[in-house]
Image (cartoon, rainbow, N blue to C red; front, side, top):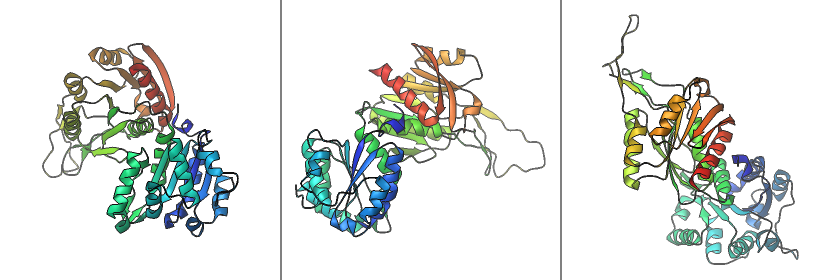
Length: 384
């Protein structure tokens, strides 16, 4: 299943409440529809005073529900056997959170929430309010109550004294996770991604052309499929745990620290271009204008250390022009899957890989997101 297919054909009911963040909902509706979702908007009166129902009707292509009528819309969409796959309440005010937690349904949105919770369908709540309101102990208790009911509450961004609504990309990702079958639920996934940067002197580094796109795509797809994901790299990926590392030593320390803390991991993906060599850094700056020699010292293989110490289900990447022998050697060493690619794939938004397992090999190609989805399908077929 490719990432775009998770929401494709699914009906998402978007509940909009009276936060100023409601102005973001036109963009949110567009983002959900780009992923293939059919969006039905339901609004409280307070929300309709901030963004007009007509604007969201235009964005969604459907009439907006602003009151419950004799058609019992809340049951049609969110009742037993209802047509919706997800109730997404974004933005969700402190008032609405507390009403939902107490079973009060005096607005169209809270009536939809009561019905959805009672029917057991997925509910995703995205708070937005002033920070002082978000810190209220009663609200904290009510959020905890919702989470104990199995409702996902997507944390806000704390900025400028406000608990701002999560980024659109995060809301879409959390929605994809909410409607997926979560075949990786309960699994820990640890991923290394991107380039390492080894200092040559005070201003220069030795690195590779790796962009980290493949590692990010693998991490995001694992999140969509329900895993608890940690990625070690030099960047930031939404919705998952990011551990920043620049050099090979930092990456090694971070990975081993995580494995020690967890007592291992279920799945380890070595997608980073981890440095095989590190120079002895020169003091100051190597002066230009004259030939310079840089001594490169070999570094220990992190992959070997992980396999020897913890032996998780391991996915490795190998850059080779043609021969399969180096990739097959990794399988003999204990690696579960190997993706062999050529140098041109590094830094590119697309790729062409040879995927090798103990069961055989096949070629996969496409965007990095599409490749990540295929890799996870292969992993799931191996671990089931």
